[in-house]
Amino acid sequence: MQPDNTFVPSSTTLRLARILLHSWVRMGMPRDSLPWFEQACADAVAGPAKNLYMNFSAVGRHAPKTPLGIRPADLDRARKARPGWMPEKWTVEQAARTALLLQRDPRNRERWLGEVAMLFQHGDLGELVALYQALPLLPHPEALVDRCAEGVRSNMTDVFRAVAHDNPFPSENLPEPAWNQMVVKNLFVELPLAPVQGLDARANPSLARMLCDYAEERWSAGRPVSPELWRCVGPHADEAGIRVMERALEGGDGATKAAVLEALRSCPWPEAGYVLKRHGVSRTEDLP
Image (cartoon, rainbow, N blue to C red):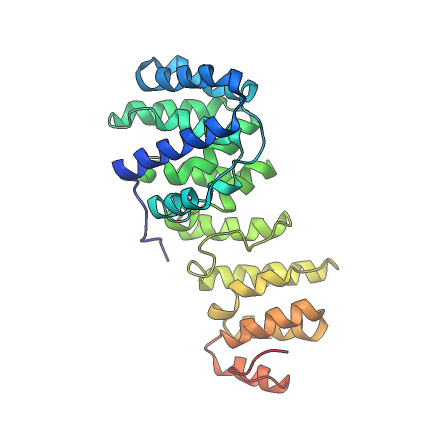
C-alpha cells in the first residue's frame, strides 16, 4: 500500500506558518536576541544562501531550548493550516530555525532544494532534528521523501524520533517498505508507537508479518515484546499471525494480553474469533 494523501503546503499554509512561528519565537527568545532574529529573517528573505546557512547554525546561540509557549487558539490555527502539525512539541530554538527556512522563496524549486540539501548535509544534531521536524511544513514534499527515509535509517535516536514521532510527513509520503522499516525500528530502539501518526491507517499485511517475526525473535532471545506491537498486527494477521498472537496470550502479562485480545478482535479471520472464544472473550463485549 502506497500513501495517497500527500499534503502539499499551499502559499496560505506557508504564510500562516511563518506568522505563527515568528510570533512564538518572539515570545520565547530573550529580548536582547530579538534584533538578531529579525535581521536573520530579513536576510533569509533577500540575502544570499550563505547568510541562511550561517544564521541557521547560529540560532543555537540566541534561542533557548525551552518549549514554545503556544496559546490554544494559535494551536488550533496551526492544526487547521497544517493537519497533524504539533508545534507544542517544539522548542524555541527549533521554531526559530524553521522560521528562517520558511522565509526562503521556494518558487525556484532546484535552488530551494539545493539550499535545503546543504542544511541537511552540514547540520549538527540539533539542526537535523529541527529540519526533520519541519518536513510537514516544507514545500515540494515529493522531493523530500528520500530525505525522510534517510532520517528513518539514522543511527541517531533524536533524529529518528524527529521523523517518526508527532510528524505527519512519514505516513503521508513514505512508501510501504520505508514505513514498515520505521515502525519496526521504533520498537527495536524501544520507543513508544503511540506518537507515530497514521499508525492504524498505514498498517498492512507485510508489516504484520514483519512484526510477528520480530516478536518471535525477541521471545527466542528471552526478551520482552512491547504490547503496542499487536496493534499493527491484528487487522492484517494471517493464520500464522493468529498463532503468534495466541502464543503471546499464553505467556504475556496483563498489558500484553489486553493488547492481543484487542488485536484479535480487529482481525477479520474466523480463526481469530475461535481464539477469542477459547479465552472467554467475544468480538463485541468490553474487555476486562
